[in-house]
Image 1 (cartoon, protein in one colour):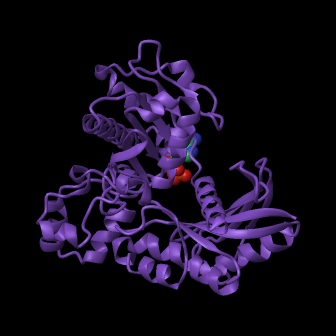
Image 2 (cartoon, rainbow, N blue to C red):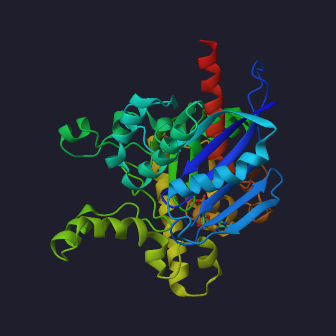
Image 3 (cartoon, protein in one colour):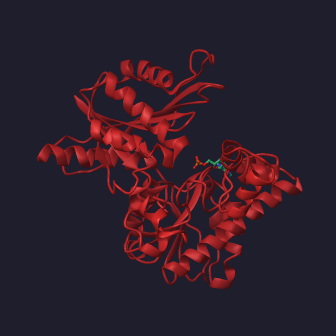
Length: 407
Ligand code: AMP
């Protein structure tokens, strides 16, 4: 029977999953074939299961009453009940999970056992919203399928080993020792996109590279020699760029003002910074770039302008860290699908010799190998490369399971 891997990417109100077929165990070929992928989202509000096959055809798109699907555990059951009879021809060899925080401990994926689980739980205070949602499915699946190895892959791992200057805040030293550092996130996406760059242009991939992951969460990373050197997200996924609903970098005095002068409770401030700010807060209209671009209201346009200026500023500042630039990549929901955002970002960088080719930029969506959008006189190439965090998790899981089998 064909072997398969199950990949789980759980958030606070959604679980995405993908199932990949795996080449034979002794095979050196390290690639995965998508069998199907889907998600349960709207958990606790408007729950919905949607699954597509490898060609993108919809296999199921069902809504559920909220009473039936209000927890991650129930979502996991819905997925398992739907998937199990449909993968009878495959033998699942392991499960890979996205885990947002590996703390200062994990610099690469790890096989989950009781001790690892305990360590991962100790990181919950570092990313309360995300880490809990990531660990729940691991716990549930360990109970249901104790026979299956589970691998945790971290969003922070790719940034492990940052130079000290990228890793610190200008705060008292003891806080750094306690773990108040700039961990960085979206590492699985950066690793995947960098891997693609290695195939597309190995010279640029090894040079001074900036990758902009612009999705509902957004960050930018600069790399040299294929390693992350600095990134805009720091201690939490709030830092750096303004996002769909997250504020991004903020004068810390604003937080003090909200608590001391306006009497807001820390959880109210947290809720505002994570859920009511960013593009939604700026525009008062939507967190979705599609809606903002389609709107003719001035606030919508201003929110997009604000976002693009911050993206360009961050790119310029990261170029300082790596002493220049050999290539630039846009990825994730906005980076891949919003030519207007790319156009406005690069316009801010014309002074530095970066130019876009309008025709190439407006062209159809990039294929899996990406597309180039720089103008003829641009000093460096500009790419659009689709990211695939689940595939990166799948590849990590497969590599680790094969390594463990060898030893
Ligand atoms: P992600 O988190 O990477 O899935 O990105 C999701 C975000 O990408 C959405 O909230 C939208 O703002 C944005 N997005 C997706 N498709 C488009 C599109 N066709 N045009 C503009 N923005 C898009």
